[in-house]
Image (cartoon, rainbow, N blue to C red; front, top):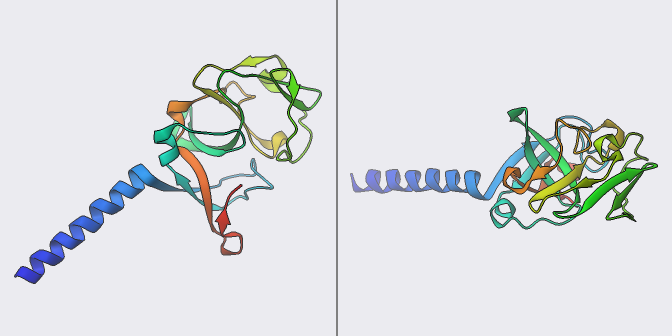
Length: 172
């Protein structure tokens, strides 16, 4: 009887710990689509750190996961380009942050449509401007449906690709 009680307590603790880790530490996400090509591919399985969501510490170029405003069951995976308080604009296919051209190598190709960022977009103190790496195939902050992403809406930061195994490792 004691062995059964100890085993039951052990199973209960494992279940509680698993729930805590899943809800507060890490979560799995699956890439659906080509908006982050060449960095991420359709079908990639990722581990998202929720700890960053708790701390609220994000940097430019971090890849984050957040819910789509029109459907909280749909999640987007995008790269942070604009930080809180900055002004973002896309002119002639280039990204400008506070009127200075951003030199970055994540975009797969020159941006054809600046969307709402064709005019300056001023980010609030808790807002981020995100883009997919496959800029011309991505619904991101350039579209009204996505827009600026509030810090409170970010689920977490992508830290690890676990599938396919030949690409297993950290995501940069």
